[in-house]
Amino acid sequence: MSNHCKYCSVAAVCAILLVAATASASPQNPQLTGKGLQIPGAGTLSWTILVLLTVLTLLPALLLSVTPFARILVVFHFLRQAIGTQTAPTNQTLIGLALFLTYFIMQPVGVKVYDAAIVPLQNGSTSAIGAIRLSAPPLREFMLKYTREKDLALFVQLSGEPRPRRPEDLPMRVVVPAYMISELKAGFQVGMVLFLPFMVIDLVVASVTTSVGMLQLPPVVISTPLKILLFVMVDGWNLVVGSLMKSFY
Image (cartoon, rainbow, N blue to C red; front, top):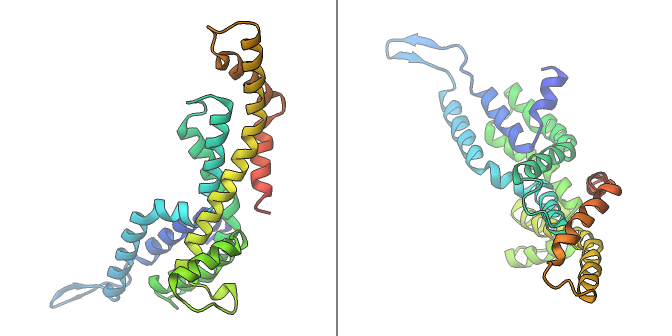
């Protein structure tokens, strides 16, 4: 497999598993017997198809659970609310940008998953279920890097399991929800910081319009163009996206 195909197959962890399952589903050496056409490894093929359909069903949940997609989308939502443009940029635009930023961050993790799980699956040294197990350590390492100890301790306590010696020994059912609430907290923190300068503009405009007696004109009519002008002048998209990317490196 060329490097180009390899990197395309690791766009996200879920996509990697889908490519792996599809690659392993090709039949080999069909034989025609008295009972009809028989394919060696038909049982493995059935399990591969089952895993493929399961991953397809859980793909949106996996994308939100084990990647930075949730944090990025929350920040973009707060940014749009702070500026005051309800439908610009559109939801499709923000989701598309969040997806590509998620791919940018998760690509190195995808390469590790490819080497640890997909290569053994293609060589026939493991099954599709085994490949999923082998893909867990790189994902766990990535999520633990951005998960707060307080959140991990909460879910360890709720699970009733003994305290592990190392964070790497934590099961995924503890790491994933702890990672999700840590990401939501980080997204809300960034959103609060984004709100402050635009809130100051709203307060100034509301004070000025009230003091001059412009009670019939809603302050948002004046403050929204000013906030958009400020955001464009400071190159806001570059600052927001750059800060988000740097928080993962």
